[in-house]
Image (cartoon, rainbow, N blue to C red):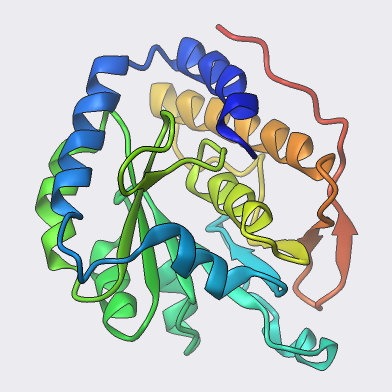
Length: 245
């Protein structure tokens, strides 16, 4: 989604959570500086090369969800582009799958992401106001191709194709890069294991993710929930937007 169309939606997210724009900008500057090495990923070109004209499977980390059923999709032609949302990288590696792309804000099991990056996975690291320390700590550890994104207008080496959480941001990215369809595996917007304030914050994040994916489903690229047996359910376009707190 073009930034001009996406920005009003993110403003509502930022208002809901009270994100500090100054912190977002600071994290973006730090990430951009760490990605200045020319050997790093030329983000738009490499992303498009990995995704364009392919089916994209975005893997989330819903509790108790199985590995993505890629075996059920192989008969459909070219293998799909496998995109892991942050901590789902570990789930993929556990069953012998190296993601083509990892979309991460660096709050999952980072060693698994570093390992996958060393084995050829592209990493798109996202800067936001709460992960400045993680960016400084972990970006230098990645040995392979790395690019960056943030919540503001595209600039320098940082992109923004829309989306809020790692999972829905990965889906927005796949659509922007020309995927023929997007299949969501391991997504459950009701499963929250945390309790107390952390659990409530997680529920609000998942509510936004569910609604933003409904917005994306109306953009034209087929969007599906992928079941464990390889069957698919069209993603609803009528999820509606959460009310801000």
